[in-house]
Length: 357
Picture (tube, rainbow, N blue to C red):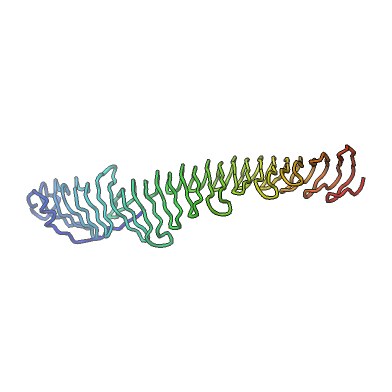
């Protein structure tokens, strides 16, 4: 997450000397020092501390020529447990494993800072400090100022359980993978609406529930499947006005088999059962009127973009019936009209009007 070039600074040898009980090293060739306290000046930095068999070994302080300081334990020339300081960044190392240092500390970047567990990798006087484990990352400047993630990190990225609070008031709590919301989680928007369910690569993906608590769809709720942030697959959508859809979605739109019931307004009680395409009634279906003067009327047949279109049968609530061709919700073309007494008229219709036998 953050590469820091080591910075130089002068150290006080008296502090380290006071901690050592070894005798002072003799001579100027530190590679000959053994079980003593001394100083080594190298191309990349200076060391003051304890030696064994010509190597840094024991308590000591190493200051690089790029102004960073390590105070702590050395073994066979390598740093062990201790404190690494790079300017305003400070890391307390408490474990060394497989060539990497592990500990706790703080890391400052241009627009953010991290506090928590880290892994520190050093090569050629360049130290890479990587958030790894439990910690907190906060943006203190820039467009993301105020954003904060608290939880588990892996290789510098949120990974595992955590919580991200955004500067607009929205919030995510749940699982992360490689820096993205991934797995089970809850995302609460700044207006209070929320999604609870599965995520993949930072998007709603899988089974989930979206609840509206504010806005024009207040009281609405969707329970079903998502893909790439969009409703996709089987689901049940209930709107704040009482409308309800149970069926299939594709790319965020009603698509495939479904049932749509109107819960309010002039069409209250109306129901459509059948095929949808791109959010509209399209294909074979049945539309039943549930209120008003047309209550009980039913159309069975083909639809095209929300209108009866093609072959179909319209049955009136008083027993009349028309079977034939429809266009734009009206009889259009040849068909048969059956009156209440059973009399049939066969002929051509245009815009719902009988024109010729």
